[in-house]
Image (cartoon, rainbow, N blue to C red; front, side):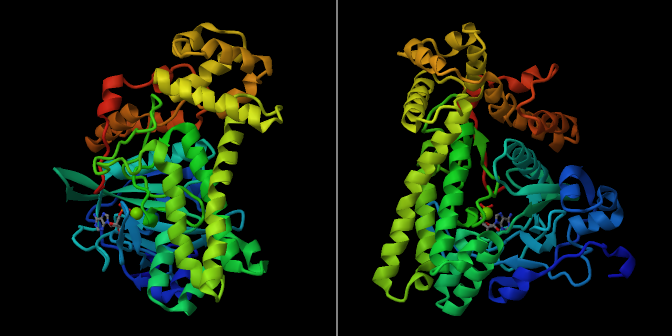
Amino acid sequence: MTASRQSTIALEARFAHELPELAVRWQAAEPPEPRLLLLNAPLAAELGLDPDELRSEEGVGLLVGTAVPEGATPVAMAYAGHQFGAYSPLLGDGRALLLGELVDAEGRLRDLHLKGSGRTPFARGGDGLAAVGPMLREHVVSEAMHALGIPTTRSLAVVATGRFVRREEWLPGALLARVASSHLRVGTFQLARATGDIELLRRLADHAIARHAPEAAEHERPALALLEAVVAAQAALVARWMLVGFVHGVMNTDNMTISGETIDYGPCAFMEGVDPATVFSSIDERGRYAYGNQPVIAQWNLARLAEGLLPLIADDQEHAVGLATSAIEGFGARYRAAWVDGMRAKLGLRHVDDAAQVAALADELFTMLGATRADLTTAFRVLGAAARGDHAAPQRLLGAAPGFDAWAERWLALGPDADAMDRVNPVYIARNHLVEEALAAATAGDLAPVERLLEAVRRPFDERPGLERYAEAGPEQDFRAYTTYCGT
Ligand code: AMP
Ligand code: MG
């Protein structure tokens, strides 16, 4: 590699150096014909990177991992994980690489990571590659989540590789450059614990504490404080998912972060009509990761993290189990508080202090939404209209639900703030039929629909003329039949 091809961006190698047992040095495959499809300029700016530099040949070289800065140490990260409840002792980045960490414009450490960069020693039977459609899906849905204020990994860029990848059919290949506050997962701790090397486990916990819970270092039991911090972050995260109808689809323990960011947009989708049994993933045959199960699954995953941390929590095993169990049991109350708080905002009731009153209204509303299968996103916008005195639209949408009139009367008597509601209830989400339509066009070479969809979801609360179709629910029959595929 010549100096002229190298990027001027400084990448650290903290994970690679501090946790070499969990990292395999590796190089990205050379794409035959790399072509930048989407660059996230606002994110580049946040990272202190020059978008024009990233668009140059050297920049694209960085984004596909073939021209990394001097001193960078790209690695495939090792981890274990429970997939659909079954334990896999070794997973790891089969088609991904951590290029390194960079310090963003605010001084925070962020991972720069590639997905679709070729086979690694963890690839097992996989080809190490990714297709344009799923990488654009991750770009669009993670941008939509970010704009909704939901913690998430981000997409810096999607680059077409010029190589075709074989799925059910041959598809154009692409690579995603992903930014995250780290790629530490529950599965990373499961693997470290399974090695039996307590010193490695401690080093991993220290690394995680430094990055995600620095206050835990001062605690008399840092590993317990780390666990509590992750429980809190995940409870808050999953509550946010539930409030917007996000279904992750593959909440395996290797897809749950320590940072509390949403990661791994595979078979994810937004629920439209409210139904706790909503599943989109073609491989989730038993509905383990259905919409309504997500909080319980998150808690189950956190219990796996707790098991991993046990030897660090207390020397006496029984004592450690007791402390870890209380931390995990705390998930339910934290989740509920975060959800009720989110509903308080969505109902325009920030001025109402009585949490029990808000909770009752929120629970009853969800029952009515389930009974009518009303579109979740539309429902909160029309309630905003009701708070302004327009009762026709909410009547049309929810009037058939038993008890709606009495509910609305109680709620309106509290004086909901319509403007505040419109600031937290999105008009535009990444609706399944819109995502599908945009990805199909992009796969056929037309990026315009993806760009228009991004424009809508990047300002989700700001209703704009000309974007009406982005606010509408998809046809009911399509929603029922909507399936997303893993093996992306
Ligand atoms: P995911 O379901 O995307 O979280 O992936 C689960 C595991 O399978 C991870 O270890 C991935 O690195 C690996 N994997 C997924 N797709 C591929 C692929 N096409 N080639 C190699 N490994 C893959
Ligand atoms: Mg994964």
